[in-house]
Length: 61
Image 1 (cartoon, rainbow, N blue to C red):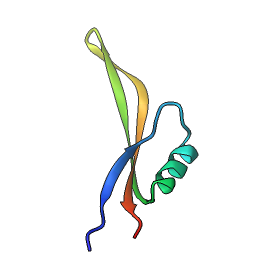
Image 2 (image 1 turned 180 degrees about the horizontal axis):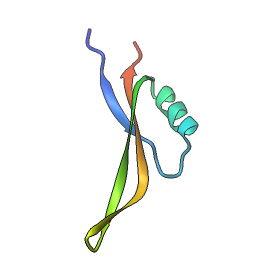
Image 3 (image 1 turned 90 degrees about the vertical axis):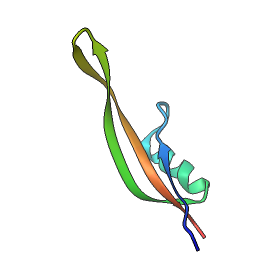
């Protein structure tokens, strides 16, 4: 039996708790989390504009 894992992005207008509830309502259990900064180039500099949060979910059987 193969367990399907996919990454979910947290939307800009939702909290972490809302994102986790959305993932659970789709029938997934969170097994990993990753965060990475997003940058915007201004001239020769890179300025951080936001933090992107993703959760990896595994399908419940």
